Every structure is written in structure tokens, then in C-alpha cells.
Picture 1 (tube, helix red, strand yellow):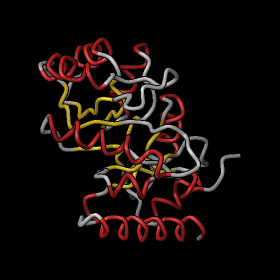
Picture 2: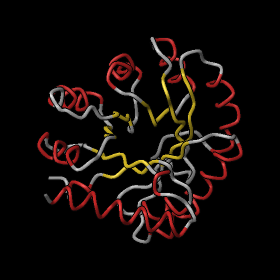
Picture 3: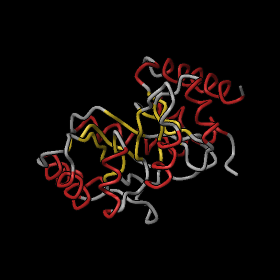
Amino acid sequence: MEIARNVQEVRERIARAAARAGRSPDEVTIVAVTKTVTEAAVREALAAGISNLGESRVQEAQRKIAQLSGCETSPVWHMIGHLQRNKVQTALEIFDIIHSIDSVRLARELSGQAKRIVPVLLEINVSGEETKGGFPPDELDEALAAISNLPNLSVRGLMTVAPWVDDAEEVRPVFRALRELRDSFGLEQLSMGMSDDFEAAVEEGATMVRLGRIIFGERT
């Protein structure tokens, strides 16, 4: 019941943030991040209407997908973490969309092994933090040109991981910069915003927010 209440509260906060920006909340997809979350908790989230799940590790996603195979709901699985090239084949088998394309080399590996058209997002390191992956904004033009020509990938949009801060207003410029970058290339999706800053992300144009703790509680 607590997870259902959390999901409802998140939906209400997204609706208010969307209204402040003159948007519809229907434009925003909640990707519930299930890292370290129990099978029972994931089932509660699905029962509360969550239909998109995100994982950052291929092996953990494999295990959860197997556990949930008997569910009435068949969620859309999002790969949201760094993808190692030696895990590409497995990732292609279990994920519906990959948010974290951070190199042309990885994109070529995915395209070469894919047996279907795979929706992908390109990860952008908007803040320039050395500890984060992704393309620098000034390299996106070249990267997008190369990746868009690959036969088995469909570039749907951009993704970023904002810096960790106490005040979400401090990362608003990161979200705004990603939206402007997305718009300049005529792309559709913006994966940005997490538990501490998703309202600012929605106000700045997020179409996907990746939420873990605010839905499932603190990780143990």
C-alpha cells in the first residue's frame, strides 16, 4: 500500500509541475528504477499502475525479468546505466529501450548484434563532470550523424544524469540545456530527472523521469 501511495503522490507532483510549465502530465513517463528492489516491491508498483521499469545492471535485470515472468502486466524495460560492450547481446534480449548510449563504439556494437530496430537515447554529459559518462554537448552533432546511420538503431532522444545537489534549482540549467540541445536536433525524448529533482526536470521538458527512492523508499 505504501508504494501505491508513493506512486499516486509522484503522479500528483508531476501533474502540478507539468501544469506550471503549460504541459500535459501525459507527456511524462515514470520509469520506476528497480535497482536492489525486491520482487514483491516491484509487483506492488506494477499493481499501482507503473508500466515502465528501469535497471542499471544487466544481470540484475535478467534476474528480475525472470522473477516477474508470470505477472499479468508486461512492463517496458529500460536500460538506464552504463552498458559494457560484453553485455550487449544480453541487453538486446531483455531491454526494450536503452537510455545510455555514451560512445559511437557502443552504438556500433549494439547495431551489429541487434536483430530488430532498437530505440536508444544518447547520454549527454551536460555538466561536464569527469565522473559521469556521456558525450560532451559539443560532440553531439558528430556522434548523432554517425549513430543515425547505423541500420538497427533508432535515436529517439537524449538522456543526462544531473549533478547531486541539495537544491534542485541548481540543476535546472542542466535540464534546460539538454532540452535546448534536444530541440536543436529535432528529437523527441528527454530522459532526465530523478527522485530529488524530477519536478524541475518536468518543468524543463522531461518526457521520462527515472525514479527509485521516492517510489520504493530508501535502499537497504
